[in-house]
Image (tube, rainbow, N blue to C red; front, side, top):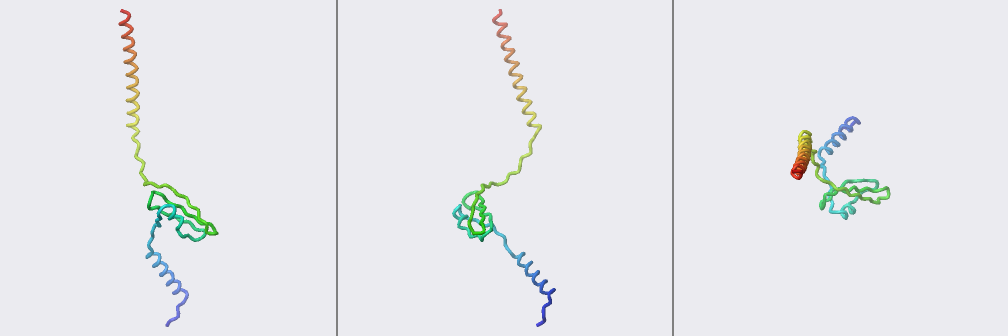
Length: 121
């Protein structure tokens, strides 16, 4: 066997590390309700987000240095993009309402004047 020098060793370790990182699969941990989140095993001074598969909740589980857990649940919902506001349509609607209000007042005034002239005769 040939002896391995430090440069070759560091290259081999780097290559193995890259292969391990590339081959690793990422997954999201899921639990069933609060009880599942409480039962999730976690090392001291750690934290993890857990998806609840029974409700739209994400559990933030933290442990202190003694390994005691604290849980916080957060409600989640699917993100919806904000719809663009049509300022022209909004302005047009406001103008239409104003016109209707003015026309209604004018017709009330006209009707009142008509009644006064009818009673005067």
